[in-house]
Amino acid sequence: MRPLLSLEGVRVTLGSREVLKKIDLEVAAGQVVALLGPNGSGKSTLLAAAAGIGRKDAGTVLVEGDDLDALTRREAARRIAVVPQQTGFMTPFTVMETVLMGRFPSAGRFSRLTAGDRRAAEASLEAVDLSSFGERLVTDLSGGEAQRVAIARALAQQTKVLLLDEPVSALDPRHAIAVFRLLDGLRGEGKGILVALHDINYALRFADRVLFLKDGLLLEPPSPRAVDDVLLAEVFQTPWSLEELSGGFRAAFPLV
Amino acid sequence: MSSRGGLALPLVILSALLAVALLWVITVGEVPIPGGDVLGVITGRVPASDPRSKIVLAIRLPRALAAASAGAVLAGSGVIFQGVLLNPLAEPYTLGVAAGAALGASAAITLGLPFISAFAFAGSIAALWLVWLLGRGSRGRASPSRLILAGVIVGSILGSVITLMEALAGEQVGAIVLWLLGSFSLSTWSHAARSTAMAAVVLALGLFWARDLDILSSGADAASLGVDERRTSGVLLLGSSLATAMVVSMSGVIGFVGLVVPHLVRIVVGPAHRRLMPLSVLGGALLLLLADTAARSLGELPVGVITALVGGPLFCFLLWRER
Image (cartoon, chains in turn brown, blue):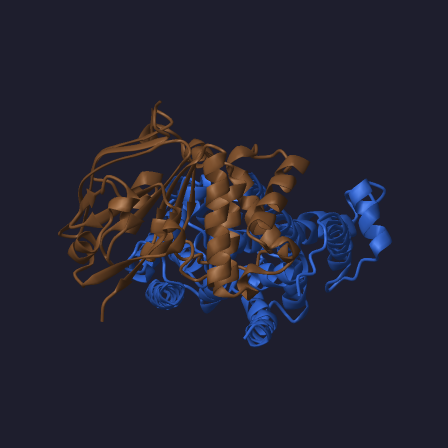
């Protein structure tokens, strides 16, 4: 089966630094792929290049088999949704107005948003546990609430591919786990999900595949089970311990 | 605090106010003409040879239309600049775009060149480009405070160049004041027609790209929501600069309309451009029409003095309120 998203030989240079050297990556339907790596390793750069909204100096990105560079921005936004690391909300739109922006790429320029668009927005808000927040102003939200609004907006785009840049960095554990359960559900709907994370434990627990970005190249262990302290120490340059928990789960933590 | 009314009611109220104001300001002047007579002139009941007819048709009506449509252009351009540049303080005046247009226009006039509006447009684009170069942050997007700082500095430099140029050219002081503070005292039907056309252009830009402007102004990564940022911003900035330049080349630089009107409208209907744009255009028309009438009644003051006197304190209040 053809992957939903594939990157072939993607290279990105920022200033004099070659941030991504040669990235080959495929995300299939029904996969949650976690992207891990130290600060500044290029996770955001990779996601931006994969979404077609960032710099890309060489290589190709294919979405559902089509060259991303050949699509219009609107067409691309109907296929790939992005949850940014920083929500950047600056203007007092309501939460509902903001989530409805996720419907703009598929709405006609002049046609009014339909009841269907509104339902999609409401369902997205419900999915991030913000149903009662529709009329609140995005500029009045806490960091975690704002992050969930950004997730809802991306869900409202109803794309096959979802790229998330540290979507749980501002969330408490309950809401972070809710987001991963949500991704679980989206996996069941056949979406392809690439999510940059800081927390290795969420990746080990919820991802189908775990990728490490180091020195501009991707490392992929054969399976999340194959992630071990040696690999983590190599990637993060600090010693790690991995403990087996009951129920077959594992917990990773840096040794101090 | 999200009381967001619909579009229809404020649209009807503002349109009615504008219509009444248009009629009323034509009655005001050295020769008072009752509203009934004004309507009589417009409907043709008063003969064309009547002096009242001449005053209304040749002087007051074109001037009122020129002022109103200029206000519409300035407020509409303010909405577009604020949305695209993600900056609540952006408007033709604070960005130096109006000053650039005025410099282009006065250079053309001083040197006796034709196509004054084209020079005004070139001046406005050059100023916008310069302000953008100085004001943009390191990551491509403009940093709000830098942009306005750059705009104010570029604007005041260009203003002094205009003063210098006209002083050296031996023009009367009045001509300089026209460029720096604006006036509609010389408005003709041709002016009224041109700035009405520009108001239509600005309104059309704002409505056609209303959703893109929503996304751009929200602070989101616009490209990921389907906005071709470079192209859309380019068209919107060029279009509103052109409209501003046309208006400035006819009536000079008028500040605060593009700043105060969109802010007031946002308080009532929120930041969505589908509502913000048409209401700001109407509100700008109403404000500048009344400001020009005040200027006219006070012995031909420059209208920019009135808009600054009214708009400046009002804007201070808005700043204080939004702390």
